[in-house]
Image 1 (cartoon, rainbow, N blue to C red):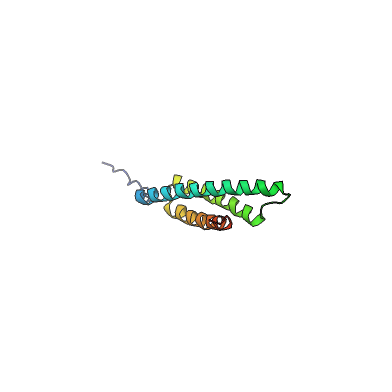
Image 2: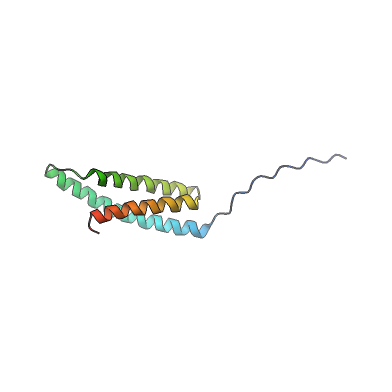
Length: 106
């Protein structure tokens, strides 16, 4: 009687920390709402300045673009259930958004 060779075991994916993912999703949603508000204010300010022949500061535009990019990265990390990457990118987005909010006097 022949025995079948043992099948190599497949590496197990680490268990998903559902509580952490849910908390990060909530934080993402709150940050997204704050960013939408800041972005609206920046757009209005940019229109007012354009009417006077001026433009929005380059560093502020760059920071807004950075927040958009980081929020996209958070979304991707959440979809991939990558808690550590989502948390890191969320923290970076929050810091960048705080700079925008400070510029806007919030």
